[in-house]
Image 1 (cartoon, rainbow, N blue to C red):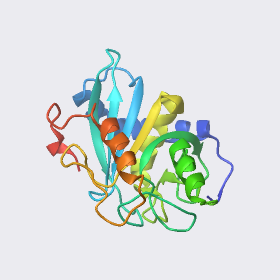
Image 2: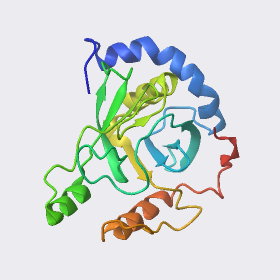
Image 3: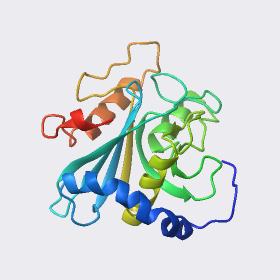
Image 4: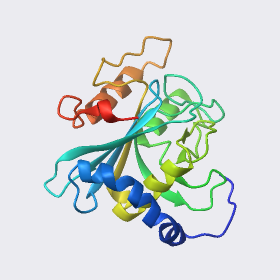
Length: 216
């Protein structure tokens, strides 16, 4: 992803922290956070074009904070398989880097391809499964999740303060809390195994326990 300046992550935090945290404060207050969450999970749901943000409190409970609309995400349901297929990946990922100089305002890099992606790429002889997948600003995407500039300011600052080692990102084709995930198109033979893992990763974040009608 193209660099467009020489800002540091600290520069971004210093510049955006007051404004971005003031925008997030009502959501954090409603979720009962008096301090920063100890960990974060982001749930990306491709067909609904949204990214849910959940935080873990100091009692170890996961609480819904808010949802961000995904303004652009190329491709369709199904995992990413190769460089240039324009697919948003599906799976369980970590944030491995913050880019304060992204040409998409700000961005957070995911560890795609992860161990699962690499295992099945090797088995199938796919030598270029792709790379450089981000959550970023603006409203354009080629395999990434674009959530707009204000939203990425909030997520970037909060994620940097919580620490990337305490963050998980799970991306699903649809919401497995509503309907069982099933590879019902001609997809790789291992896709249902992937969907079982994604479904299990969604389980701690219950629709029944939290009122998700407030999300937008």
